[in-house]
Length: 203
Image (cartoon, rainbow, N blue to C red):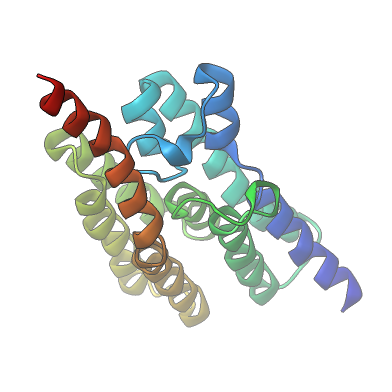
């Protein structure tokens, strides 16, 4: 049991690595949580700092999500332990120890976890997400349809019920985290609008 707790703790700590924050400080000397929509994720990084930085964040965060599952599988941990690790790594991304517990919404991390758990279904869901993102420039729309499709395909493929339940919980964590961040995001919008108001008055 103690080894399992260590395994879950390592999954959380891995999720806590604030990729987007590190990239934004490297690329612009700024905190990504104060730029754009305030989310510490790949999409906000791409919008505010450029596509190459956003892609780098996406790849690393997806690797963060997949690694605990793959490691647990290699070490012989049961599926239930792997699912708990998936939850822990997303919790780490959302509430990172190394960034004051103020993290992102976990889309890339949970996508990586799902790619390790249900690779084909998650891959198709990601393709739908990327397609809708490119067409409509709306990450929320892509998330709903892409990740929702991944779960639906997992059901049709008769994946284990516990895997489907975990996928549902991880997907629901995205709007929940967005709701929890609503106050911080509103403060960021107000701070961004104040200079515009000041400029319009000076004109």
